Image 1 (tube, rainbow, N blue to C red):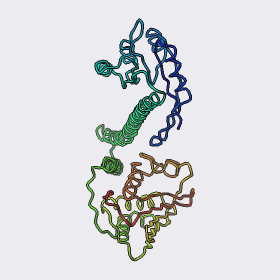
Image 2 (cartoon, rainbow, N blue to C red):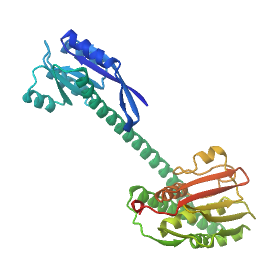
Image 3 (cartoon, rainbow, N blue to C red):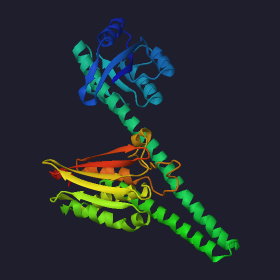
Image 4 (spheres, helix red, strand yellow):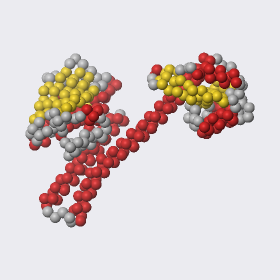
Length: 379
């Protein structure tokens, strides 16, 4: 990544102004830890009045400001600069270097102090240090803005996901209240629909709590020896009734030794989500097959269904939060849109990975890779 920072150099000595400009015009500060190269665009001002005028017209990332200027002095320019642009970093330059001046300038917001005369190397070192500070500030602001945007989108989507079922249940209750529903069969149907909506809301809340605890690192983890085969057998048992109602066969093909170190509740979330989705998005009379294999380093778990499948566009956003595949075949399927994003975050806690292979109207296979050797840091 390449950045260009704007620098305002203010000094009443013509040789000093242009000397600084020559030293910085072709200088590129490289920061490998930030993956960033920074060059500089220099603007010159010979007086404090000219500097204030330029500040009023344009924001600068850095200022190199002479302390002793004719007319408006450097401290007054500093005060104006911080008033207009609090984030602008100011480096004071002066031949009258003293502790009192440095303290006074720092109190008014100066970032650093450069005593005249200075060499090009000293200038570049000081500018480099200030530049890194500017880049870190910019990245912090971008991160904060991104967090605000994500939080706003998150709340918007969550509000929508909760508003729809609340509105539906409210509408059903109004029908009862007004006496518009007379026959028992219609009443039963309305009650069933209301309960289904409330069940969906409860699942959304629980999924949201799981996701929040995992991301915040507040979920209590209890790592113990587990049997992966048994975990997936249990998950298959949970969907036996719903699968049988639609003629979906359930199959498990696993190696004998599936001992694994992990948190049972976390891995149950993984198994239950993958298998319930495989049934939910399957076609009638289809099948769900779970395969567990291992090599020296990893377990690989595959959950394959013969269901609706997904397009490449849908696959690309599959593990995002509140992502639900909505098309003519899935509109009737309820879900929070948080399950797979939670699954991915859990698998990443174990240093693993998950991916999906899918073909529209032919089915989907989720492939989970779990490293056998666990790191203490992850537990």
